[in-house]
Length: 234
Length: 234
DNA sequence: CGGTGGGTGTCATGGTGCTGGCATGCGGAG
DNA sequence: CTCCGCATGCCAGCACCATGACACCCACCG
Image (cartoon, rainbow over all chains, first blue to last red; front, side, top):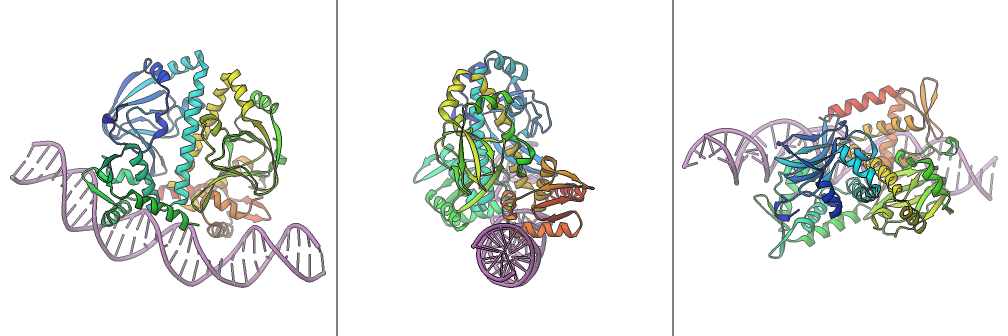
């Protein structure tokens, strides 16, 4: 939960939504599980085995359609995941895959179900979590449906800046620690297109890149581009 | 709820999920509201005023990003909608707009909240509803992210056939009653592209179109196309 | 029964972004 | 320090689909 052990994730707000009291009660039922890089915590079609909290590292949530993969979000320390199949009784509809080394806390299905049966008011928290998730999922769908790549990129970078950014002179520093390929996957674009766009922005002085760090030097320029693209589309 | 008063909707399964006992209790709290064509039941940013059930007609769920609109789903008689803002306390994140003349039953927010407070176990149903919604929303996102237009169209038509189709000789008849423009919006494509694709399929004998009715003559051909496109994409 | 307007079919054109391939660069392992 | 391998930058060619414009057709309505 401390910012320092969070390796700068992609937006995943809703996974965070978990009242402290409930988190503590769940934590008491959990055991640890270690995942090697690229190892799957669960895959599409798996039966629900538990409710998970990321302890360390990062997981990619995604799925494979035919031979093509897509990524929904990345989750990191403090994020909870895996409740959907527990709540509707269907198999998992997406994959959860460790990006690097990762550790998760596992609340076994039986124990969670027992807790819920004993105290059904806890369903209220899950309903709230899912309502937030639904809202964001629809919003991402809308972005993909209406915004061209530069606008989607600008929006994402501004979100990341708001969530994980730290002031750096006149700009905002984002510690990405993420290969361009993975960022491209999340934006539903190709690595090449992403690289090209970033370089173009760097040339204009909007951003600066070094190592794994990205600095928004002129966030206002990104906002302007976003507004303009949105208007132009009509 | 009878098939005959359902004017052939676009896929909207999850809105249906509502246990009969809960539906009856909600219905007892509801009053009716009539909507003229294109009138909004609620819009993005509106505060939550109630939980709704479609009685008659059809509503488009969508939103506007900049000057560009997108459509998430259509809902029709028997479908419930509008719970997200009630559950997370935020304003509406999408629009609900009557397509033709429509009538909805309204459960006022106060009454729903009172019912939930009195009987918190009802949250369980909402959690389940939203879990299903989440699953489908992510699946639509994946379709848009990975499938080219012909595959998305094939998938949608097969879904519609499974939901609303009736046997017709060797094929499946779908009573669309929907202008191509609205179907195109749901597929996130242009009217022209949709028309072109449908005509091409008609030429190959895969489908037949007349009036507002579409007949899948060779559903197997659509499934094959879908499989092939998915593989080709890798 | 003729008019009118929305829905549909079709086309030329252009833009966006993907594909595949290759060069370069950086950073970690030995 | 040197080497290797992943990550990045860059380019040519092309596929897909949006756009805008226009003619046609049918249903509905006066």
